[in-house]
Image (cartoon, rainbow, N blue to C red):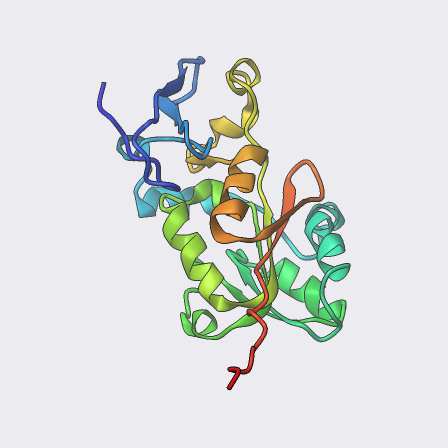
Length: 228
């Protein structure tokens, strides 16, 4: 069996964790990293960009859907408790409707959206923000390490990164987990994974729900005048 490098920590201790063989489900393997605890689908099983876009086009996430707004409220509520009114933010992976962008604006925040498939204008990725939110995006990332590093360069010192993604389970429950059945889901983060991310980058981690975490970027070191 080939070795696959972890797409988050780049480690090579990534043994097979689960092999999908349920009826009517595409066969694919899942590996779990022994260093950062990320569970991931190796690249040979990934969809191409055209296939991914076709699958995303099936989603019906509208701003007028009260249920979808309540779902996104699980991110907005803890965000509002941590940032100041008027704070500027980015919704990374905002989707076609930019629903959370609108919710943030109505709540008194300044927010713009970026989405690789639906709003690919790179201009929002060329400035810094007080907060960045990403809802139901990180499970789709083939290169979570690269994306995370890029987002942290866009986040001001002391800023918040909010990530919504369902957290990976133990082996027995993972084998029956509906979340793995989406063919565009290729990365599965556990609470231990987020603790690894926070420790690696000196961030403060706050677990605020079953599928939401808030990561605070460290403040700049205080200026110290040179003694003469």
